[in-house]
Length: 281
Ligand SMILES: Cc1cc2nc3c(=O)[nH]c(=O)nc-3n(C[C@H](O)[C@H](O)[C@H](O)COP(=O)(O)O)c2cc1C
Image (cartoon, rainbow, N blue to C red; front, side, top):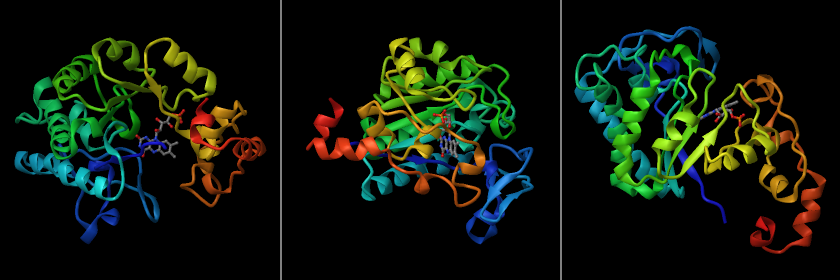
C-alpha cells in the first residue's frame, strides 16, 4: 500500500571513466576535478578532470530527465525524485565552487539554478508535477562542494519551483546551513526533512522534527539499512537496531541490509493483524 519514487541521479564530476559506457570522460559544469577519491566498481580511485558541458549539452541533459522519469514510471515507480543534493550534477550547477560559468547556466543566482529548474520542469512535464520531487542539501561539503552563500540560491530555486505543484521538496539539513529553518517558511508545499549524516535519525528526532513544523515528513536513511523492517518497527513501537559505521553500509563487503534480522515482535504483529490499515493504526 506504499508509494515508491526512484531517485534520478547524474553523477557529474563524481563519476569516472570506469563507471561510464565506453570509458568516456565525466561531464560537469566546469573542468574542476573533485578532491578525494571517487567510487567505481573496483573501489575508490583518483578522480579525473571532468569535461565542461556546453550550454547545449547542459540543456540536453536537463531535458533527459523527462525520458528518465517516463522510464521510471514504465518500470513501476509511482514517481521520481531528482537528486539535487550531496555533490552530484544538479548540486554542482547550484554551487559556486563547481560552477564558475559565465553563460546562462552560471554567473548569477538565476544562472546557477537554471539546470535544476529545467531538469525538474522536464520531469514534471513528462509525468506530472505531482509525481516529481526534488532533493537538496544546501551547504553540504560532501565531495569537496563549496557554497559560499547558499541562502539566495536556494530561496530563488524554491521560488522558481513553487508554481509547478511538485509532489514534495526533500531537504537535508546541514550544520553549515540551517536549511530546514530557512527554507520551510519559503515552501508552502509538502516538505520532507532529513537531519543529515551528522545526526542520527531516531524515532524521537523524527517525531520532534515533524512536531516543530520544520518538516511534514521525515526521510530515514541509515536506520533503514540496519532495520529492513523499520516501517513495521515504527508501527509496532519496537526499538530500532542502532546504526553502525560505513563498513556496514552494504558498499564495502557482505555485511548489512540483507543479513540483519527482522524483529521477533514484527512476526507476532503480522500474524495478529490482517490488513495494512490495522498496522498503520
Ligand atoms: C550508504 C549510504 C548511501 C546513501 N545514498 C544516498 C543516495 O543514493 N541518495 C541520497 O539522496 N542520499 C543518500 N544517502 C544519504 C541519506 O539519504 C541521508 O541523508 C543520510 O544517511 C542521513 O540520514 P540518516 O541519519 O537517516 O541516515 C546515503 C547515505 C548512506 C549512509
